[in-house]
Image (cartoon, rainbow, N blue to C red):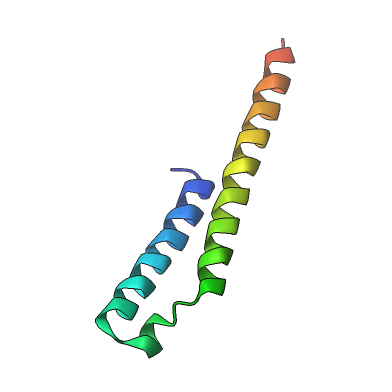
Length: 66
């Protein structure tokens, strides 16, 4: 398991836990706001894009090795 997957999984688990708490009516524990949803989606998207770019660059440079 790589670090990117671990980080994304953590963010998703946190968002899921907060959503469940908010749906139960426990607003203090949930504290789910639109800002947190936007931040989580933005971080996940940026991590996915960075992973793709880095993986492609590493593979391209590794192909040049003898």
